[in-house]
Image (cartoon, rainbow, N blue to C red; front, side):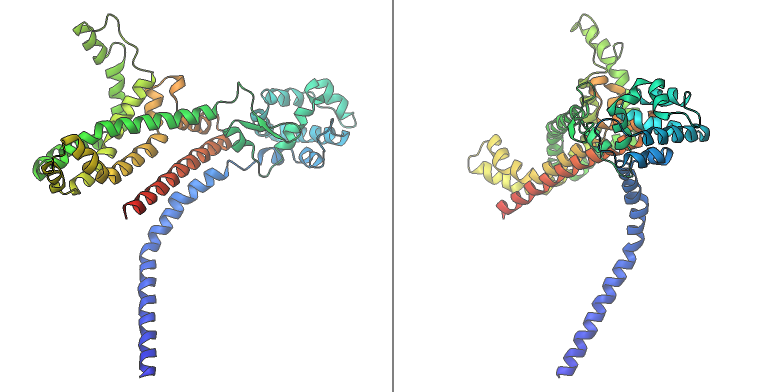
Length: 406
């Protein structure tokens, strides 16, 4: 009997292993696709935020010479000679622009300094230090050499610090960026503020619609739900362009207000924060309505009638019965709208002014216009961290709420 029981247990374990192996094999193609098509490209982009290879590749001699420099005073004559030799070879190879562009991110005007100096390099046997100092007095400043050393790679915190308005000074200490360069904290706060405002507007507008849909018979609710889903079938760019037509100074809204005599001159509505929030709320509204509708539809209607039969007025029925039971839908819809709003680019770019652009606009700017992939990756990492932190807070609050209900 004992041997038979042991054999049966082994067969059960083998059967369980076979089922788990089959399940793994079934989902393996999907996991591989997600890894190759989703996770790997994101990881490769984010890695650019800590990579710093341009200067070591183009200026290897001076990078090595500055590795042991203590940062006090100017480096020795060997560093000047190494820089002159590196710049001579880089100019001949056509790669000087790569290092000059990277150093220009750190100190404005470094690109001009590099190219101007490259045209006045000392010849063989000449004093490189004297020649470089004669070419431009900037080579006699410690900050110039400190910038080259900071770009020595292969990894750096330069882009990540810049994304939160910080930088390293000549001594390597982390300090605040100059006021005229410190913009990204304000941009992040602006992005969070606009996203929160859009989420609240969608909640206020979407809750009554979801409640109406949940109260209707199934056939009528399906018809109205089709109208809610209709924006999904229209391009985001088309919907944004429609708001441009509506809100411009000679658009439909201003024309109607002038015709009704409510205003005496066209109101500036486009290229404002109002236009950005309104258009984003319109586009994201279905993502709020659908979770709310699903939750409200599942609430037994008898609960409200029971509360009313006990003397509760409609507002108390809503506050004590409907609202608490609908909180999972409120949380899900708000999270969906808020996270999507964080990454919006087209709508603020077309409808907002310079002070209404969100962090995604700056990511696109660095990726496509200045081709500064390091800065684009650092800002992407900042947005990803902010989103993950908010999701973690939501998960913690949702978990505590479930515990209290239990």
